[in-house]
Image 1 (spheres, rainbow, N blue to C red):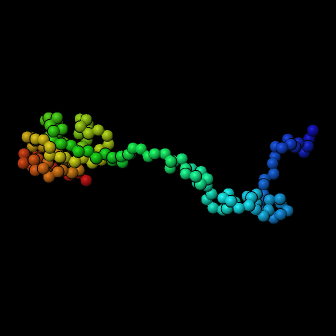
Image 2 (image 1 turned 60 degrees about the horizontal axis):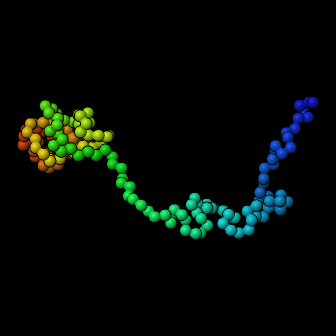
Length: 147
């Protein structure tokens, strides 16, 4: 047997279907798409979930529940929670996270004035409420806004 005598097995190599090249090819005129109908047209065709004109199952099913928009790490801290941090001269969002007052990612911290504050403290946060700012400054503390 010589190398030029080798041939692939019968049926192993298939000829590619060539469509739209006239009547002599056997796949001319409609190019194997048939006559009329949805699949014979050019364009997008059938979208996922299309059920031939009847009401799709996804639209028949009842809609249930409500999905809350995910929060982006906004935290509100009251003076009641800050009272747990005893003997701190300055309070920052990193310190609040370290002590476990804030859980999750820290993107924005706002200090609210609910509760009492007796010691002058420097608090660094992204925002302060009006009452919180008044209480901190009346005791002799400072409000520093972080950008």
